[in-house]
Image (cartoon, rainbow, N blue to C red; front, side, top):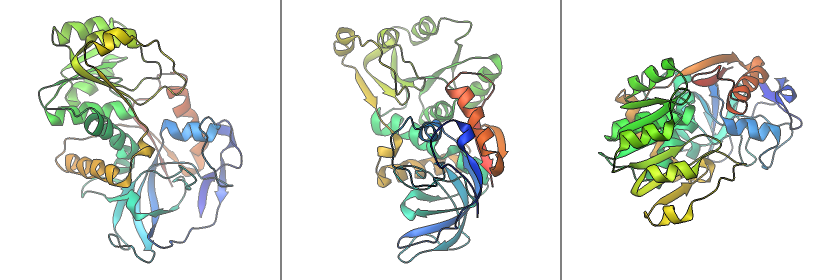
Length: 331
């Protein structure tokens, strides 16, 4: 089969394209013919060697996939050949990834693709949808009527947070970097959109939140400013951190504990299969109800995987601002 793979960690240029052995499903495993794969920042960090995980050699990167079941191994209960599925959690903890024509995975990491949802859209929602859901509901316990602020409303995770918050009945605030992105967030249900390039974000949040403040702050940016975030949180507010591996912000202990605040940090790949399935099932429900949409910024052929990695890295690490939406690779 054709695949994008690496023999050593490094920049996007280490990604090669060529033939790799087609996997075969073992006990409890499903062989999926990949129709679409989506990229995430974790894929960049693993490829670069910035995240210490076991890597088979050669290693096929990529967490997210959508496609069609090609074959199943012994003991598989929920899928059969021809089923459309999507999933995440590949390319992690020693598992081979999704930038290939075929992927072999445990059935616990796969979910049925709803009717009417394209493979590209299914792959693009995978990791980011599960991450947004874990933070909002397993961690922060977001409730209808609460005020939710997500810092970065058109990013992969941020766009899911905006829409899931709206679907829950929360009042949603978010930040963006352009009028075009502001319009996109408004279509997704954000009640207030703050342009961080032209406005003082925390002053605007304070003004909109009023005396009650923000109940849940979902931080998707790499350098959180806790000195400014904590004051805008409501009493018993919750903050969720999912980015900033190297960040070491100053922490305002007194203002934090005297407001009964809570801080949650988590990595999606630490969640159990059962926890992730609850997120996936709810994501499928929201998509079937047309309450969850995904913006696809660029599509690449599998042979262009290095260019896809380079574009995402330019925008996530170097803040180029040339991408709105997910990067999808199509074998």
